[in-house]
Image 1 (tube, rainbow, N blue to C red):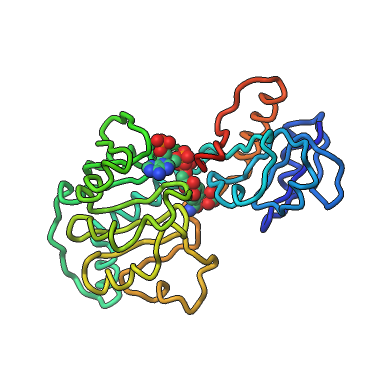
Image 2 (spheres, rainbow, N blue to C red; image 1 turned 90 degrees about the vertical axis):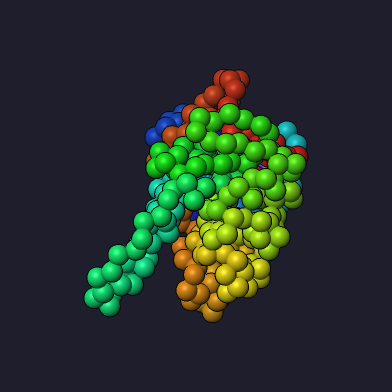
Length: 306
Ligand code: NDP
Ligand code: OXD
């Protein structure tokens, strides 16, 4: 069995070493133009040339959860695209959202500013029931985040394409229930995949439906948000604040106004990093299963887009 590796922005060597340790009988190499046909490829945003030159790939393993960049390429219909399922990312997302939510709810940002001035002053306690948290996307990441937030006693709502039941979470589904989901939410967390149906879904119309004091946590993809809509809503007091991890252009240009806006916190696409060891072991397990004709989880439906 031959496996090729092509990871934009990542050194392939540690991945190749890790995969070799898991799959000692496989031939595993970095992809180069003109390489002989392989059975599987492990990739992050590979060049179209790789796919054109490798029509016999059975598995295309993405080293991330989101496959929006991969689906822009022409992938042969018989090649199965497989995403990472969790592999250590959902707990990171839960940490990120709980931290951001609690920092905002308890006004730790205000205490930090007070401390810098040597000011001893209490904030009036707020009620959790006034901070319903709505999570868009209840997949591998969204469900874990919803459960983590519920543990802190906040009312939790979720929105997905298909109906589902999650303990402690009020689930809305489909376009028909989107407005009701938004108008019941104060802190909005986006964990949708980027598809044609979700591009631009965070905009002045949708964000304008949140409860007063709305707060946005945007951690899936930059193209979910109409960026020009955000600052006017913050400046007009229609939103209380936003924590943003993903952007239309990454790295976020140094001159971008998001960096310096007092109601925006920026992080550099760091809410859930791919963990190499967990990811290698998951991908190797899926390759073994595929080779034995067994089912694998995380196979992407290219029509649905995730
Ligand atoms: P999943 O595919 O497991 O879950 C996607 C969820 O979104 C599902 O609940 C799905 O509904 C729902 N959904 C999809 N389309 C729609 C729609 N049109 N309307 C309503 N709901 C919809 O994805 P993950 O949870 O693993 O990851 C989510 C995204 O997070 C990734 O696609 C990626 O873009 C982003 N991400 C960002 C990272 C970062 O560091 N910032 C790191 C990792 C991921 P249903 O359940 O009905 O199918
Ligand atoms: C992912 C990401 O999709 O890192 O996994 O954004």
